[in-house]
Each structure stands twice: as C-alpha cells, then as structure tokens.
Length: 196
Image (cartoon, rainbow, N blue to C red; front, top):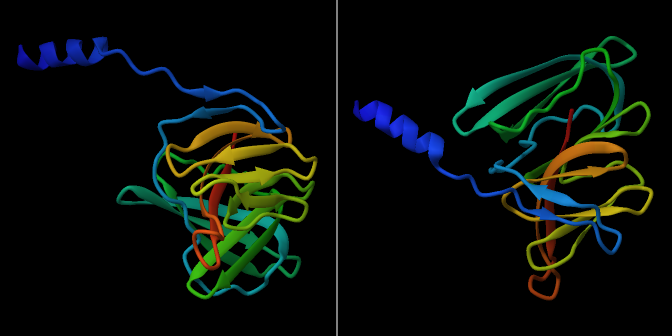
C-alpha cells in the first residue's frame, strides 16, 4: 500500500515549466533542459589536426554520471582514427555511420578540444573548439556567446544545458567563461551537441 501511495504522489507532483529566453539582440531563443554535467574531450593522441573521412562507428559506454563515446572515422586511405568524447548521460551524440565528417581535434597543455562538422559544414559537436566561421566570446563572468557564420548567436551558461536552434539545426549546449579583467588570461569553455 505504501508503494502505491508514493507512486500516486509522484504522479501528481507539478513539474516546473521549462524556462524559455526569447530571441533578442541577435541571439536565438533558448529553453532550459533537465540536462546537467560536463562534456570533455579527454587528452589523447591526435594523429591529424583536421581529418576528413567517414564515420565508421559510434559507440557509447556508461561510466558513472556520464557516457564515454568512441567515434571511429576512416580516412581516404581506409585508416581508422578513434576519438574518445565524454558527455553527460542524458546527452546523446547522434551521427550516422557513413556520414562524411571533418574532425578537428587538438590538445593544448592539459586540455582537449574538438569540433566535428559534416561535409556541408554543419556543426555536429563542439567541445572548446569551433569550426571555421564560428566564434565564441566571454559575455559575462559565466556566460559564453557562440556565433554561427551568419552572425546569429546563442548565450550559454554552466547549468542547466540549454536547447536552441542555430544555423538551421537543433542543439543542446552549455558554456562557462571568465573575462580577462577578472583573470589574467580569461578563459572560455563550452560544449554544443547537435540533436535530432
């Protein structure tokens, strides 16, 4: 009986409505999600700073509160290159096998960054790095603005992740920044994942 009462109470608990920030001043509208957590491109060996190829495989393995994705891309010489990417458990990196992609990974000091776009230049994944034509800047002490090549932008914050449409596609993303006047070098950190 006790379990039945709990189930009824949970079913009746009102959910807070999603907060939507309307589009304004060159920024697209965003909606808060229930996604939380950090995305990363762990430091790893990078064979090619700009690899063009086809997605051969994409697998995910649960690792605590996040999933470890392994993206395998075959280049024109049929050599397979693999990239490890960590995303919060509820964030899905969806890309079809056979998709032609440009993978731009880099490791700087102790940080890994990666951008993945398709052969038409559409952004599929960005962790700390954006493809050519895109830009990111610290907007406030915590917010990051990311701009598409056409000029429209989105403002991202550390939590929760926000959903939005930019450059004709749907994404979820998060960002965190420190402006130079507060820190000697300042820094920008962000993650954007294409959704279907």
